[in-house]
Amino acid sequence: MAIEILTKQDLAIFKNELLAEIKQIVTPGKLEKQKWLKSYEVCEALGICYGTLQNLRINGSISYTKLGGLLYYDYEEIQQNMAKLKKQVKKQLD
Image (cartoon, rainbow, N blue to C red):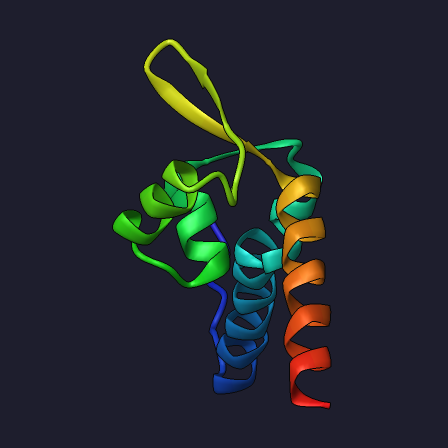
């Protein structure tokens, strides 16, 4: 049985590889691959609380699908709504 000695450089390389893998798992682009998002995912993506999301549902600003007690939101529709809001705010500022 051979003994391998780890150096600080080996540990630094391992750390960088591990961080790269973690970033790949956690990247915001991950949401783009999903067609339907759960409530907590929408809240995280938009930076809003659950109550705000509920208000958006109630006033019809955001549509959803209820399936088995869970609410799902269409990712593309959320992106389109955000783009519209961005344009409206830009027009108001001009």
